[in-house]
Amino acid sequence: MYSQKAVKNADACRFCWMCRHLCPVQLVTGKEANTPRAKGLLVSMERRGQEKMDEDEAEVMYDCLLCEACTNDCATGYDPLIFIREGRTEAQTVLPKYLKKTMGNLENRASVYEEAPKPYEENDINAEILVYIGDVARHEPAAEMAEHYLSILKKAGVSFKTLKEEPVSGQMVGDFFGYVDEVKDIAKKCANAINSSNVRTVIVLDSYDRDIMVRKYPEWGIDIKAELVSGEAFLANLVEQGKIIVKDRAGETVTYHDDDRNARSFKEYEPARELIAAMGYNLKEMFLSKELAKSFGTVLYQAYRPDIEKKIVANRIVDAERAKVKTILTSNPQVYAVTRHGVKEGYEVKNLYALLDE
Image (cartoon, rainbow, N blue to C red; front, side, top):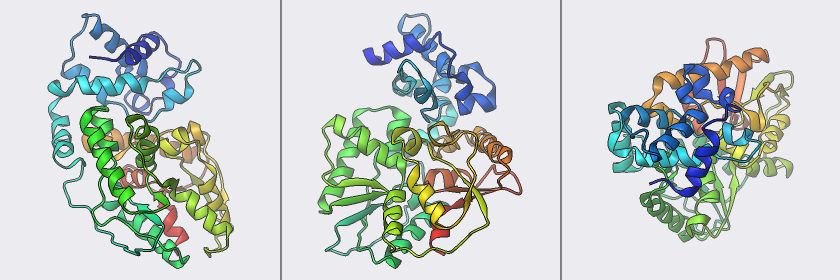
């Protein structure tokens, strides 16, 4: 059963074409079914009894990155992600076979990963800072981002702790199933673990985790008592204080990719650019950057659509080609993970924290 909010947004989006050119999935598949408009039309027809949720409609709902490019661009303030998430909830009994393995992993472990997360244990009992590493940065290939980040903090003399058994935030489960009760239970467990650490500040390495913590936890009555900050913003402050000494890279030209949630949920662009400037890089922006940045995709989408995910990565690399820059920097674990495949020869996506740690 769709909520009235979902119905209102679907009915508004079903006849509008204004954001179809922004959808990263549609840009590589060329399918009208992959646009927000088509998803809104299906939801509208379904609730009117003109369509019935089946495997084909379920596939339409899942061919979406939830990147918010459509929402960000909508001049009238509608949000397709509301009815897309609810559409995914409605689709659970008719999922295509290729989605069921991912569904099983998320049901059993609240994670797309089959391997155990990498343990990080920093137990300074007096520390007032917690680093929430997140599920993606606790697994390869993005684990090196966490390793370099913690190394930077140690070199800067920052006293911090991590959670030995860190609960997931609920982000991937919420994006796959919609915001069902199980997601709220996961969120409560995560918030309780963070609150039990008795810290004042939580550095959240993955903006996807910070997004659900900041935007959804309070809506569900779940309170994290500490301040939540991004990994980039915390390091930029340390650089400003002179606590991080970086290698001078003057003369090297790079570009930076703004990940979906930092760019559009938080409108936070400058901290990463301040870190890049501190190293002396010549930063050349891609045509689509900041809140307009084209998505590189997500670990969740890669889990069930690896073929299309590679094309999405390749399509974003085209923007770097047009800017005539071969090195793209990222500070997001999901972006780093998905760009281990699909990057054109001669181009590379580098871990910003590894460069800061040299």
